[in-house]
Length: 145
Ligand SMILES: [Zn+2]
Image 1 (tube, rainbow, N blue to C red):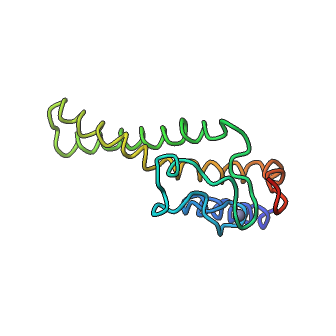
Image 2: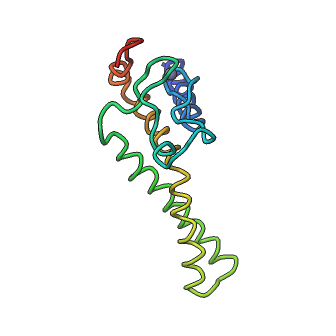
């Protein structure tokens, strides 16, 4: 039992690392997104590849798959950061309310855009970890569309 839970913990960390590195949760080798130097549009930045070029794991099994990633995970991280920043700014500087609102709110959309890739990659990794049966159905045979 202990060895089994330890292996589950190790597996969870492996998925976490792969998600944070924007790598395929299945093989951990290939990228989920185009490298930033190869992005030519915002769509390239936000849209994951169709599947893993290494192991054929399909990243987006259905339309709307990333709604939870973009709305819940990204929103929770950005709002959590906003609350933390507001708390620290108020504690250290106690600026006027309008200055504090500007300091806290202005970085949030930028942070949100920067974290979209990680939110999607972490969602793919979480989905793979908690639904290994569904993940197995997302492995495409080589050469399949
Ligand atoms: Zn892969």
